[in-house]
Image (tube, rainbow, N blue to C red):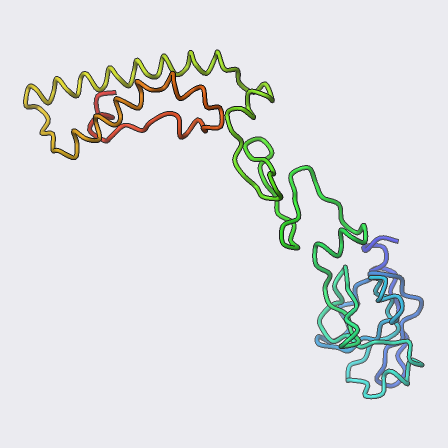
Length: 228
């Protein structure tokens, strides 16, 4: 029985201060008419299986609840019983189940874009990221080529076109410096040289497919960007 149906079918019979559950099924939520921070008694053996089988609920704490429920009940105090639970033997109660426990009990399945890391389910972008040694990392150009998202030939053509545009901006910048239209500091010149040489080395760098596209294409300085 699912959570919604179960929640609609919960019924209690009140005897004194205790609400006795009338055949409540697993993983149900307590009705709103029960006060907050109430005490609930759950079946111990069912709790060990991750099932919240409610035996009763009370507005006041039942001091002898173990005897009252014939040693079958365990105590839970809170607003609502978690949908997925884990039994805590040292405290003889339950807590909300963590992702890893739910996966082990087949209460949860990993989606295509999810992975379990350090006991928690983490999602990632399957289009731009991949899993290596249980870690999420960015895909490389080699991955994109293997997945036929891009081809090496088209990327080379794209790089040649972009290089022509970038180096043309460098030439315009150099002419502006010679005319005195732009004041070039030693730092500016060093950054200009690094940028120009990086674009000249693009064909050689393409042989290393592990290099990301972002790392492959050098970024222009603000002064050079003005001439693009």
